[in-house]
Image (cartoon, rainbow, N blue to C red; front, side, top):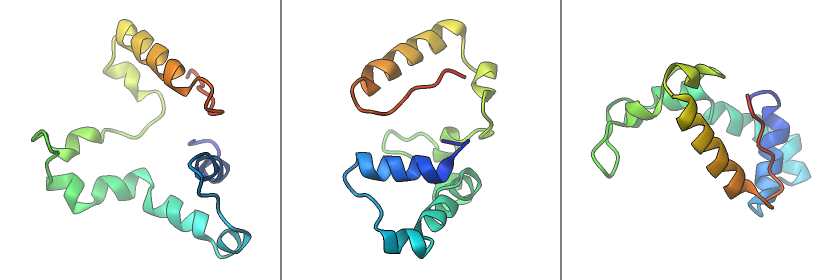
Amino acid sequence: MKAEPSSQLKKLAEFSGCPFSQQEDNEGAINEILKLCCFTNMKNLEVNKSGKSIKGFSNALFFRNGEIGNWRNDLTPEMVERIDRITEEKLKGSGLEFQHI
């Protein structure tokens, strides 16, 4: 998603049954959504700096560096293997591709 955000957002919209119209594409809706959903913007929303989740965890815990591959600093190889296996299982047949980094 980080390599080609516009095309990936289009694929995600199509997959979820809400593809962008040509007019929305021409008017820059995709770029606006990407700006609103960018890591920096999401991390800096007040609700994510000071809010809490339903379970009482700070929303800030869901945001780290936003860098590709930084998970290596926090996850063990066993954790990575398990997450990869579950992700591949869940995406199977969806048309979405899982890329190992």
